Length: 159
Image (cartoon, one colour):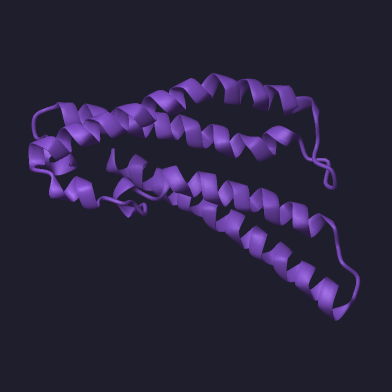
């Protein structure tokens, strides 16, 4: 099981690295073409935008763990441990509900734009908006897992 988890982590990191490298390479090509050769290239902007969307949404839930996100937890840390547990349950449940409610609409939108293509490279739009769909599904799954951990015995480790 640890091998599958390790392979999954390596895969998710590799996807993020490739997306970031593509974004950076397109950026360098754009800067060079615009300022050195005085001939801007349009496709580089689209590549940068799509790669950035994927880096942000792919990484934010699959690679960056909850404790690594920037949070404002001054009031949360002032509360006693049991109250923190119930605050965590309420916050996690609300995130789960909001993302679950947003999932059908997001799915509808991604399937709606499936027949459209990007302006310059003519890539299918689900390749662009699919990143948010991946984010929603993984956010729902991780919220459900965290909620289950908070509601079981031994919850102190997950607060």
